[in-house]
Image 1 (cartoon, rainbow, N blue to C red):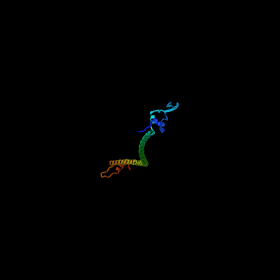
Image 2: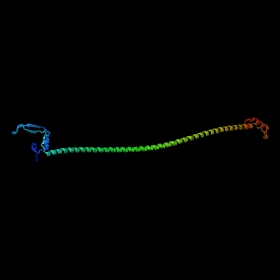
Image 3: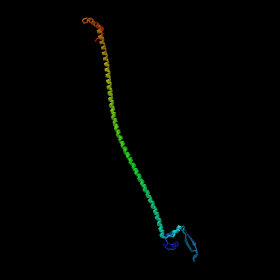
Length: 224
């Protein structure tokens, strides 16, 4: 059975705890004068009145109980602080995990962008090579076109020359054909005149008169 001192014993005991006295520091005091057992008038008796039941309960507690209660309160507060810190640590871990995930996403995006940049650079280099090749081919094409144009002009000149020569030859041929036709016509006329005017005797000897008649009938301009 635990021995707990009453409020009166703690108040009367010379070893009352400092915690008990501090419990009544904020308690208002009521000073009353009374006459007790032949006491002289005017002697004061100090009566302390706690403000609440909780204060009265604390006043009835011993020093170990007060220390235990203070320890329990401190321990509870520390436990709450520990729980709060653990919660903050969990939140920090979650935040770190989220930041690591975002960092991984950013790294993936950066790698994808770097790959895209490399592909674009390779495409640009390919286009530059194609442009250089096309420019070289165009330059060669211009040279070829210029050469072909020169050849075309030469061929046109030769063609005109050949056409001129052919036209001249055709004119000469027409002229020769006309001359041959005229000669043939003269020959036919001459043959007809000869056949018509030759007079032969019974022995096949031509007379001189027949020759004279032939000469007179032949045109002078046609006789060569």
